[in-house]
Image (cartoon, rainbow, N blue to C red; front, side, top):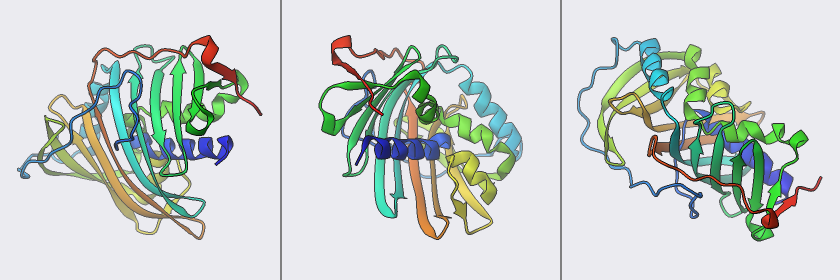
Length: 268
């Protein structure tokens, strides 16, 4: 797969996960800590905030995430690239202490078609392709806009906020434990038109609505998200089965640019 195709798939994959996240790629992103496996307890009754009020739920989540400076993220996406079933996994760490210049490190496994690492540090972006050895390609400033949307979408609450107007109702599913943290599981019914707001894709949903599952802790922080949407792009089936976890909130991270000797300029 060419560099351009890999980057296109990365952008599509991360864009799709703009409102979610999870998975477990084989490589560990620099600075990320290995999260424990998710486990679930028997569902228990848990009232949704403000009597199933979507707006109150989103207000709580967004307020909680305004205080977040660092976090880890893992994602898994089962989809199709050029008509071929593909499972992509992503694992990374994000430092948004400076919201105007978010730093991020992420490892991507393209499901048998290649691996890739991305770094966004101090306003610069670097890519490392598994087939190209240990050298990092520095993305020219005039090309960064093509890929910044993919890295910035690691803020999974951004997609949720964009889709707020398409969220029709919320119901409590139960109390569960995610990576050792007690959470409340909610199921949000989203108008089909909201898929593009969550996923960043142009795919459409045959049904009028779809379900978007969210697990939040007592502080309102998102710990897990998931959705399974049989979508279409034109005449092509584009499955969107995705799961994601976030954690290690506000713990120290280390995201550093590669050494100059390990960097080459990206070709055209």
